[in-house]
Amino acid sequence: MKVDKDFLATLIIDFFVAFGVIVGGSFLGGIGAYLIGKPPLTIMNDLATTLKIWALVAAIGGTFDAISTIERGIFEGTHADIVKTSIIIVAALFGAHSGSVFIQWLTQEGLR
Image (cartoon, rainbow, N blue to C red; front, top):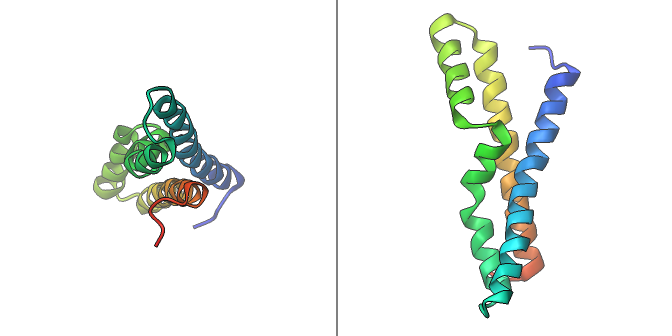
């Protein structure tokens, strides 16, 4: 499988979209927690763990496209599409996890 520039650009963008959803959502949620008198760092850490699935969905542009691509790959025999979609999902997962680890490091919550 040949890796082209467009595919590599898609991987980088998906990584950073997922990362940004986690970090941005946690920061804004922390501001909201502060405004209502709850502990912002704890809320930020909780949000970082619960936003992971939404970061993945946002990064891949909705789950229906990815599922239809995998289905097309299985039933029409285009295995390259399955591999590319799987790699895109993994890149988004890495971005979401990296954002979560960054928030954990920043808040020092959940570390032992």
